[in-house]
Image 1 (cartoon, one colour):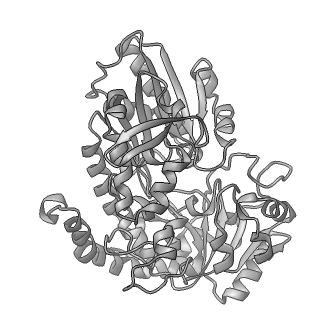
Image 2: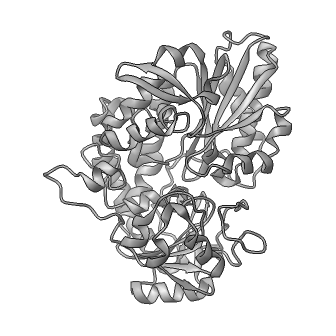
Image 3: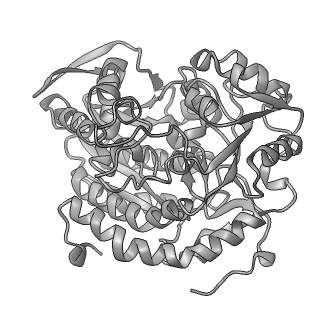
Length: 481
């Protein structure tokens, strides 16, 4: 592996930020300055660190034709015979899909599915459902921004976790789905396979997790989050998905697969288990090395500079949540995550109480993020600097984090915030979570460190860590790799 010259690195290209009522009320709804524009910030290409990371067919700003063609190819072998001309069909989506690289790739997948189902089945009663994690008005923003009402002739609706329920019989009793999700004859499950929520699913039944989260009422979501541990909780989505009620309606699933490089392809099928395995192997090969490389960061200032809540913001093609727990190998099933209630509040007796934030994160600068999701642990466990009075007002009025404003300070500008954060953190290492895939937006000092550590990380993951991850899931590394 040849070493990269830091001096040759180019300027970073942050992702598009969609304006939202959950963001700061600036004149444009956007930050005045992006982290990529700070002096000394560079784009460190992921492929130059790990050449074997799967390449992308689409990166933000590219022509969408490869996404459409890949979706068409993935759907060729999908059996759609359940769907008749007079059937009703719900295409199920998540608002998080519309946060990936500006959201237009996910939109293209949805549009292609709708058109192909119409062509192959003659069905015209195809509706779109958009599920949300916490922010109740976000699906409405998504519908308007992406012209989804026009795409579906007005047959589009949010599916909220506080909407009317439908009971689903499972081997552990009745669990509650969202009625709007299941109010059609058939459903098509359209999701995304990038490394989000690893602390929750651990790459076990990853394809089914939305059935206990995105498509479930809050009572059942709470069962998943709080009543089970970080491995047994993955029983819940599988029980719901495999229930007779869901199976009678389920037709096929379609996933946008991703690596830190961008969208790598589209996976679709009537059976989710082969897709589950493909996404698992892709995650190990794609994200294992990036996660372990982030574990080589011993001190840094993290800059939040994208759409959504901090934990799910992307930097270098992987989410901030993975840096938050980078000191823990979350692919290793022997490891207990921090973020779950089980791991944070009720660790096993043999395990010491964990910190809510990776100790390597010495300070956080909040240039742009959305409220509406609980993350008090960030402000109480790590020095946090807000950028601008609009951001300060946003945090003060956030009902999900009602005490957060008491634990933060506010700077008038991004450079001032970074200067202050670097002083209290005593480091020149900056890393920005600005939504970018393909490259890590970071300071020259951190880029130099990551370049030097990448070869050792690559060897450790290939020879020690990945074989263990596979064996834990019943796979022989000789067959799987």
